Amino acid sequence: MQSTSLLARMTTIVGVVGFVMLIALPGPRQAEAAESPAPRAMVGAYYFDGWAGRHRLADTEAWAKDAPTHLTKRMLDEFPDREPVWGWRDDRLEVMEQQIDLAADHGIAFFAFCWYWHPTQEQIDEDPKHTGLKLFLKARNSDRMKFCLLVANHEGFLIGNTENWKKAAEGWMPYFTDKRHVTVDGKPLVLMFNPADGHSEGLGALQAEAKKAGLPGVAIAACGRGDPKLGYTHRTHYNITLGYAGGSQEHRYAELVAAHQQAWSGSRGQPYIPEVTAGWDKRPWEGPSGLNQKPGWYFPDRTPAAFGLFLKSAIDWMDAHPEQTTKERLVLVYAWNEFGEGGYIAPTKGDPDGRYLKALKSIVLR
Image 1 (cartoon, rainbow, N blue to C red):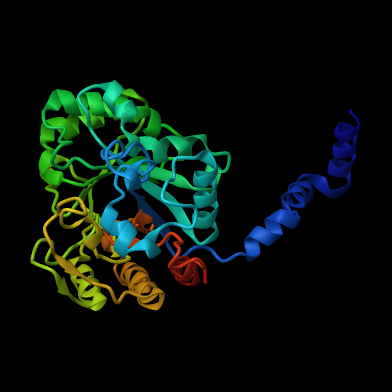
Image 2: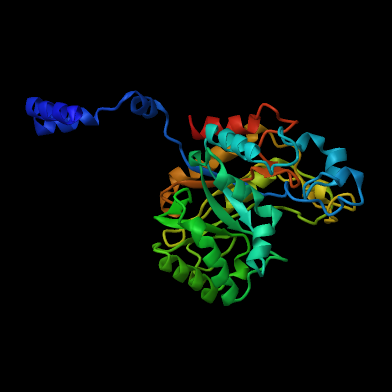
């Protein structure tokens, strides 16, 4: 009652216009926020959760007893510097909250979580590779970031027919309607790892489910080539690799940078989201002490400075070609935690000070 009387007296003294101006003045927190630099881009980082669950060799190999699903003996023996500062496992809520704070403090706006198709909802719920997404949604500080899905519809997890796409879409709607979900033109963004798995009927079913849920539609970004006639509204990449199974050869990080920069191209009809690769070196997953992958090229000379310049070039490209990209100025980084493939910016025992994060922050929040 007293506050109502005070407001009435204030209105009488300064008039309606003056009163509106008075209450619109920024308070201390608003003024502080106004002084903070606006991010030069909305940067997202891919989040691969191979660092939860039970290892397939847990019952037969001592080193794997408490290991997450994608840890390898070769990684332990030859690449121990890739272990995150919080340890190999990330399946604790406090670890996710730590990651959220680290990412948000350094200018990362969202995580793009890998999501995998299974024939039943029970299998989807039990997939340990979905642990990070679940923890993110439970985190007390998750309002500091946004999230979206990278549908990892590759071999072993192909969605396939229209009915499966419809089932998958139904399961995605609680994510898409979440206020923390990334949107493009007001539509939730979903990234498709394997565009060849998509087709007009399946992607049409996805759009129909979205509208049924009260959404204006979905922004569907193909990683690589995605025919707009099939329903792909945007394009991007997960990463661009050279010599994936071309034999064990050492190459320069600059070659990866050049390959990406040559791929940055979009249009008003199908905007492109530039992707920046933090590195590529999958030797921990090659051979019998890895995941039995074939040897390929690796690029061990990456540095925080080179990564920062790469990211800057992506932002500069958007500045020069606004008609080819999203108005939200999205950029994707491969990756937050692809430790096995050598594409990671999360702090590790080899980078305990988070130099890659600091490089990102210096570009995005300068």
